[in-house]
Amino acid sequence: MDYFTCTSGFGDQSSKGDSKGQLLWWQLSLIGIGCTIGTGYFLGSGIGIKITGPSMVFSFILAALGTYIVFHFLAKMTSEDPQEGSFCYCAGKAYGRWAGFSCGWNYWSSKILIMGSQLTALSILSRFWFPNVPLWIFASGYVVLAIIVVLLGSQGFNKVENILAITKTAEILMFIILACAALIGFIHGKTAGQPGIPTTIDTIFPEGYQAFWSSLIYAFYAYGGIETIGLLSMQLKKKEDAPKSGKVMLIVLTIIYVISIILAISMVSYQSINQKESPFVTAMSSYNLAFFPHVFNGEIIIAGFSTMTASLFAVTNLLVTLAKDGDAPKIFGKELKKLKNLPLPSLALATLGLLGSIITALLLPGEIYGYITTAAGILQMYNWAFIIIISALKILEIRRGDKVLSSIGLLLLLSAITGTIFEETIRFGFFVSVILVAIIGIVTMIMNKKWKKSEKKKGKVTGLKGILE
Image 1: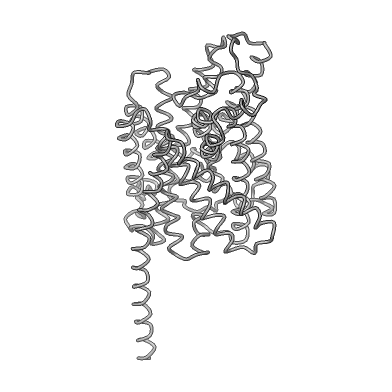
Image 2: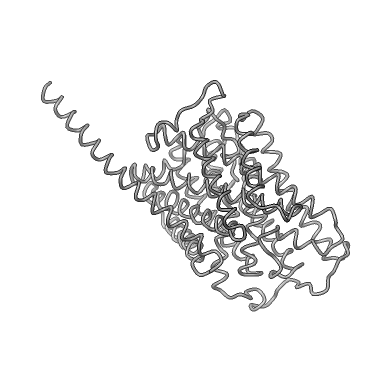
């Protein structure tokens, strides 16, 4: 979840708004903390824990380092050359129109997959109360509700999102407090066979280092949204405070992520954690807290739905921006003034993407969440690597320290991507991401030839005019 997503409304595709230059560094940090937390952490982290065990804690620490490097370079680029619209502008500036085009569509595709992941997560969590209801029925219901919210417009939506961001942070803090109370003995439950905090290499890495490698993608996925938080650095009162804001945000996020994961794996065997419910609900299931699973699960659903709906706003606006820039068919740039400038064609295409998630949920009810989440996470890594770090190397005057940082960042992102190849249960998601990137690459090559022909024609016309004059 990201603040740019939260605040994206129809008729306002600009990344600049009335609040430009009004944010303090701590406000941007707070926005980032609340809005980055989503179903990727509440549910997706369970896949990583299941794969690697307690070493998932170190996955989150490494992912935090990689995420900070991404934020570092994006904040630098946007502070030097603040621009309206998508951060894919940076890629276009660095390598030409083909880069901006391909990155824009890659980002759109990743957002569609992320929404599919969120939609599937909501459906899985809803089965906590109704285990016999098929996933696709819940998915269909949430899609309809999300579209209704979008059709109502964005008025008042930002305030609701800010409240829900606080709710998501409070959920983790609630778990940490209750888990500590349970471990101390204030809350009674079945403590027999409780694994406790692992202290040896064998207990920290019970599935081996290869499994740890494969878990990295889910840690990175939990930090998703940092790229658009970086764009908001241009709205700070003091632009030079952007690095401080990012550091504080990631430090706080990492602390609450790591503490909550340590508590979860100390309370229940990692082998009992699965993708059907949040690992935090599983951890508290043996204690006498009948309210906890229902309250926690309900809050995650509310928070996840807000994330998915806000993502639908953002991805719809992104396609409008691409259309206006000539990187998508013009029809997707059309807005209906009678319906609060609603970009209906763009919304329709995003809805088709969500319908695709419903169909796959119907066909693959057991594996779909892991597949979609893996593919979405990998596409996110592609975006971070090319749009932000590689583009920064071309645009910015890079010092030795930044060269070291960029190398570390690219290595971590590459590790997260390649790690998915070695885990059979999530490998299919890797191939999905490769297919999508290949399709975007082929389309980009076709469009690039078209642009070159158009430029040649323009050049000939201009030359002929000069001769005649």
